[in-house]
Length: 597
Image 1 (cartoon, helix red, strand yellow):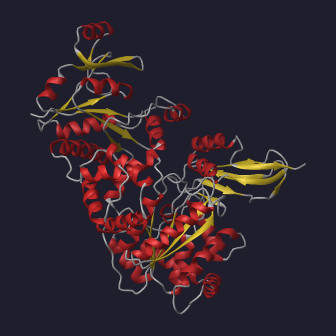
Image 2: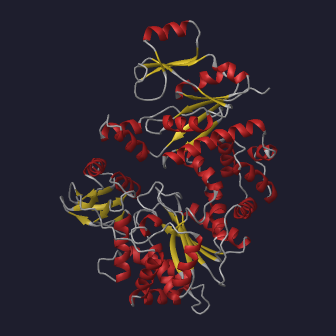
Image 3: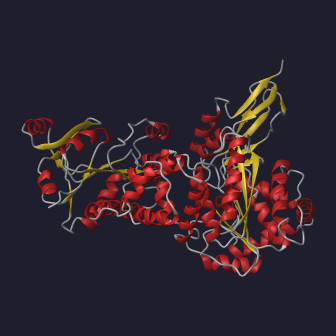
């Protein structure tokens, strides 16, 4: 009989591992296949927290000396122990799930026949909110706990990551899925293992081989550590032919939408530039012209707002495929969240791994993005590739190479793709955060004198390229004239209002009235605006969770300022978040001033 698996559950404060273990115990504990280990802890029985065996420090030391513990460790003034009897369960083929400690992973691996680490994770802001919710720490202490450096997990020990950012029910489901996926692999190893080995050795795979391998990944037949190794290899060794093969295979794993139109246009941005909310301007221009543009967009991951976050200030974005079709039939366009539309379980698996590891997966991203456009029924796609020190593409040369890859792969997939390299060295527009960015968008659409010129110009650049695809327009110059006309005569604004009504109008969200002005410490001119730092401050202020939070820029690059002039205004979701953002802004790194001589 095969020996069982020892699941060692670790995670930072606030990740919720205790709650997930208890939820899993309620559903798996009665199956007879899983034993949930009861820890011995030097605190009284019945104390708040997990169900445990309470002992005194002397009793714990006596048990440890007698060899009664498989593992024991000390943390936060307490001693923890796991019984040596768990080895008998493993030898009998049962699986053990134990609440553990990250620094005990190596020792656990040396003492059990097969160890799998389950790492429960959550975004920093979620961890901080949960720690604050306990009422034992203030905001600064909670932030310090979240930012505390922890030891990296061993790369040679099998690991499954469980994202617990959502509801408790979602977290428990993911935890159980991760455990059961490992158990299935243990009982029946994946048949595509030789293909994974080939890719890890740097060899190319063809379309059929990728379909075989990716299907096993989707069905949970590989550990996160194996998928991580695959993604690292793919980021280093992925030919143009493989990108095409991956895009075709990925399309077959995504729900497809079809449109009875000869031309369906779409837009994608590689992101990384705060503000730059041109989609909310471009789509109404295109719809007002008469082309079909069913735009699906993402929410923010590390930025202060995604396109879906901004559109949600105005309208419902969580649309079903049927609702998208109705909106497009009524208005010619929509701006919807892609979570329920272009959902790909493959992306869900991959993103859980690539985000914490920060794997450079730009070539993989080409396959992912274009496969989604194919599945969405698009025929023509424009891609925004901003480059700059804080974006995904550091140099113009990197952006240009990726633009060529997008266009070449698109052509091989039967798509018309134009990729534009743009300046991502500073924010676009004034607002950073959902409501503030929507304010800028409305100013452009309304022709207000306050409209940011750079936001209007970038929107017209992309709209002109899209309209040029229409044979009746025929050129970029004519597309520019048509786009300006639709902006100036109010047709684009009217198109946006129709889209809002079709999607479901929401009560408008205004920028938060809780504000703090950041002022120039000296006379000088603005040398550099660090968009990444500004977005970090905006997120600290509460964006994008709070739609009214963010930053309102008052200066542009090269602007002359006097000491005491307002550089930007922070809008906070609460007094605490405003104070946290203000502290973050005090080092002055967000906007660099060059002193006048």
